[in-house]
Structures are given as structure tokens and as C-alpha cells.
Image (cartoon, rainbow, N blue to C red; front, side, top):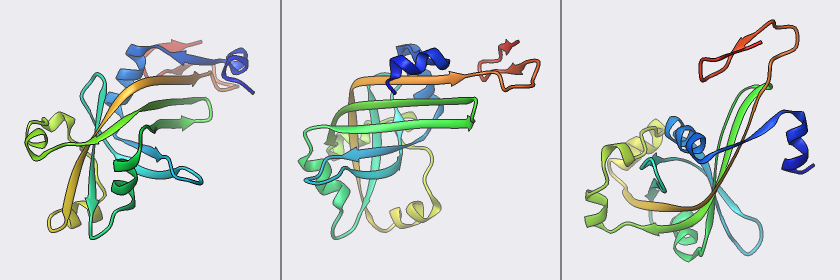
Length: 165
């Protein structure tokens, strides 16, 4: 079923402002990098500049498949989603390009742009292991959402605070 067909069932497209707001409220997503066979998918935390850039920190050792694929890729995808209930979910798919930031560029990245959430394992390893900082330039963003009233409820409060009756 296409996105257009799902609109008949209550799915809505998100506008640019809603997409930016959603990206600002989230901190995790899935990076998709091209390979010869199937895409290489990596869950990552991210920082967002509030406009057109995401930022990732890669923990790398002797070898890093994600760093190697990021260096080779002409394009990449990033999925951010939230599914609170079967009646309320959001999904944003981004496409764009990746580039590694130089040390000078890395130093100019603000705290707000730095990924805020990281697993403790990654955080601990990052204190002694090498990290690399990557910028994802958003070229295209598509967002969809579904906000429906659960059956049997007289109303519910949407995340934006409005009541649906």
C-alpha cells in the first residue's frame, strides 16, 4: 500500500516544521549505508543543528565498517521514529551525504549539536578509544505520522497537548 493510500486511514504527512521539531525531540535513529548487497544498518545517537545537519560520533578501533562505508558512500539514509502506541507514531526518513569533520571543524561543533545520548558501553570505550565525528547533510526529508483516537475512549490528549474527541 502506498503512502497516498494510507492517508485514507488517517496517516498524515508532516511538514518541514513538524519534521524539524520531531528531530529536535529525538536522539536515536538508524543510519543506512549502501553496500554491494544489502544496506548496512547501524543504530546511532545523533545531534541536530535545528536545520539541515545531523552529527554522529563513531567509536573506531583498528577497523570500522561504518567508517569505511561512510567514506565510500555517495549518499546515505537515516530513519528516526517513535511509536508510543498503535494509535500514535511518527517516522522521518532522511537522505543526504556524509562527511568526516576535521579536528578544527569538530572543535567548533556546539554541545547542542553533539549527540546527547550514548550507551554507557560506548561512552566508557570512548574515553580510551579513538572517535571520529561525522556530519550528515540532509538533502531530503519525508515525515509521516498517525494520531488516532483509540476505540472506546471519549478523548485522548495528543503529544501537542490538544484533545481529540
